[in-house]
Length: 85
Image (cartoon, rainbow, N blue to C red; front, side, top):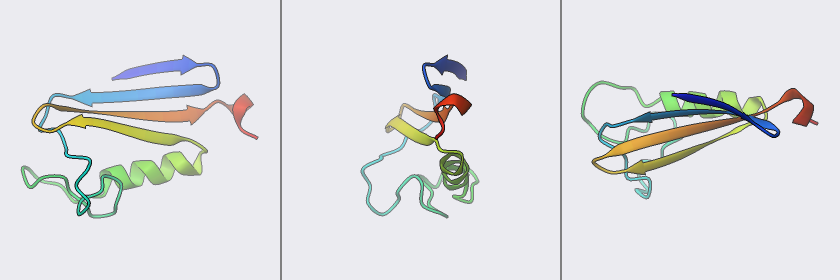
């Protein structure tokens, strides 16, 4: 996990070395409610959806970069108070 403050944003980056995700699969978009990227392990498909909703309500956005079979990195961009209009 990495936390950085840059110009007008606070960035939170979380990376793993898990199964990775195919972000181009149209039937399982990452930020859709109850959408799971794989069937391994337990999960409900609400985590990414909830994070995205919370971040957007605060004026931020999130990015996901993933390599199937290797890893996933999620970056959350929050605007600093001075940059929020």
